[in-house]
Amino acid sequence: MLFYLYELRRNLRLKPSELRRLQLERFRFLVRYAYENVPFYRRKFTSAGVKPEDVKGFDDLGRIPTTSKFEIQACNPKDLVGFNVNLNSLIKRTTSGSTGVPLTIYTDGRVEDFYTAVWMRTMFECGLRVRDKMAIIADPRTFPKGKTFLQRLGVAERAYISIFDPAERQLALLKEFRPDAVKGYTSSLIILAEEFGKALKDVGARMVFSGAELLNETDRQLISSAFDAELFDFYACTELGWLAWECKAHNGYHVNADSVLLEFLDDDGESVAPGEKGKIVGTSLFNDVMPLIRYELEDVAVPVNDDCPCGITLPLIRSVEGRIDDFLIAADGRKVSPTVFFPYPFESVEWIRQFRIIQESQKKLIVQVVPKKALEDREEIVEKAKRKLCELFGDVEVEFEFMENIPLDSSGKLRKVISRINR
Image (cartoon, rainbow, N blue to C red; front, side, top):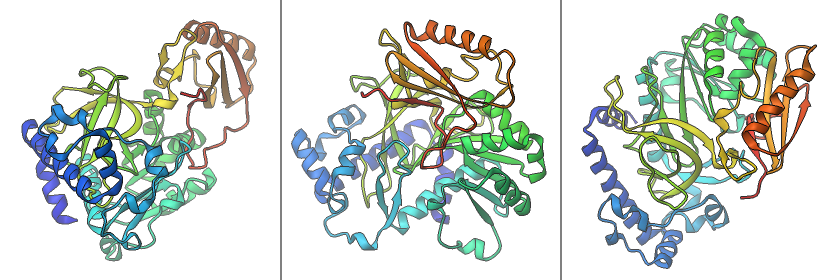
């Protein structure tokens, strides 16, 4: 792992052309390996009439068919790894299933060491130190079963806090542990910030890492102010590992181009121009235990060609716009990004504790709101919000539900925008 970390840190300032060469070499290796050793991809490539030698450059990526979650889910696990690989010897990673499609991903110790090194590189670049203590608020099913070598030496201590614990218990555990850094789902950090406000300063953390859900500017300010700490957002997934992250310049998200190849495609499967929204297709460049080649992440992001003032040459994406399924559809068929909401459609958010929009159909929206206090002018607020939503969506029915609590998903996440339209 330390060797991988050393190599990965050297890659931070490679010339873009060198990074692209590294990506292409690794991609071509994976395609050949998968074609020769992995039954699922052997069938998939043969059906598409593609052979490894057909991929000579980046212009040939489109010749390789994309892979969906449903294909992987429906496949026998033995068909997803090499012919001679013993599944019982591998490490299982299971996705949260928050989209309704839980998956099991297979790795080994070598791949896990590499992913850990990618994660550590990010943390160190953001200012984390080797001896710093970190509290991690997450799904307890993802907690490690034991301590690392460094942790057994009393270095890099970690405290794992269940996202399903009451907020009061989470705060008590944080105060007891006194971490230098706190890492958690965006919604769990928001809940703590709204519940306890400035009291979170007593935790003593100097940095906060958020991820797993969209982060808007309002929530960023809320969390950062409550903890009195610098916040770094990241983008990751169980299937492909740590994908992109904010540096200290906060100028977008650096893509870990030496560990993953991300493509941003339009509805026709063509690459979008810089500054345009594109559906993300990703390839893990290191996990040859269970290759995922041109895997559909079902997220949308905006790539850019900007240089970051921090000096790191890893490519940038301006923002992750959300999941494809979280994009809403207006009455005339327009797509509406989930990033437009909160404070929209409200003029003020001071009275709101939690908020969620659900699109039941192209003609109906449900707005769920948990208020912090009783509202004397609730009817006026609702009517103004309805008018704004109708201006954006057209002729739609808007229903408001005032609730005491919005339930979390089974994964412990709180999705702010949900579309139930069958695409």
